[in-house]
Length: 315
Image (tube, rainbow, N blue to C red):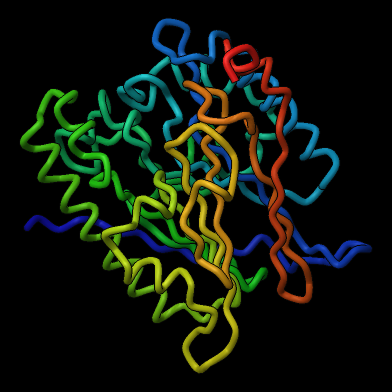
């Protein structure tokens, strides 16, 4: 089996200082957002994506301490970007989200739609359109590998990103230019992702882990060990650990359609306005990190009638 590169990085943006309410930092979570005027589901205009983008800008101003955005993929419907110079970087990202929202790293993974036209799907990682090793390059997402981890030492936090597109391989690879090679590479990347997941769950000493992929926890029905590890509330040495898991793929923002990882926490956050509505909750998440070690997450949604064509009369 060919080797799959897995990246790691330790970053620090300076010591975190607590606000009056004890919050030391915040982040946003978004998924399934890159609306296309030709190919789309029941989201019939960019208005939904733009409303959500505007709400994200408002959240930036209100919070004042957002350090990063978790992007769970399907960033460019319907087939992803071809390379780093694809015009969709402008039309579906830079021209939609404010400079302020794009002024922090977007920690990202591939969704199934992102793979379809991407140069990296049929070849090596060096040709992948979204792979970017430079956390300071804010003109693109930060994705230093298909699966990767990053330690925020100043926040006692680790971020772990997993490429698990094998969970949708039969609906993805037949639509690429290289079905056989796609299936091989997707399987290799999933093996690397699971290996990294188990490694970091064992080795990380961070009090908080943010774990994300394109797929919500109910897709892990065949991987009980993954769900068991996500539910683990202790870290090496017996100290407490909290895990927040985020996935997309379905187009809603909720905790009712996913598999629980209690006592830890997880969200479906695929309601970014890019394709269709699988529920009335369209929007993103705010995550807040506090000086006592807590992470609190909450949804921010928009009026679903601006997003879900036909929803209000057939539901």
